[in-house]
Image (tube, one colour):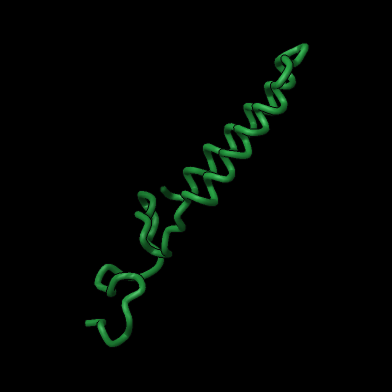
Amino acid sequence: MNRKYLSFIALAITILYGAGFAALDPTPNGYAAIGGAVVALGWISVGVFGKDVPPGSEQPAAGRPASGQPNDAPPYGTPPEDQR
């Protein structure tokens, strides 16, 4: 999965966990331990399951010029001897 999406999910979990401390008064027993484990697992999943997207392989936003390789360029990582 794209690392940007996993990072966004992990960040949202972290923010909600922190907001839970402010919203819950008094904080339930075990909230810190269980919530900390969930946050840690979220960030570990970013490192384990996150895949970096090669430059130029993402679709450009509407109205913006494409960055990276032109459309007729060989695929990312193609050795020079195999290029057209």
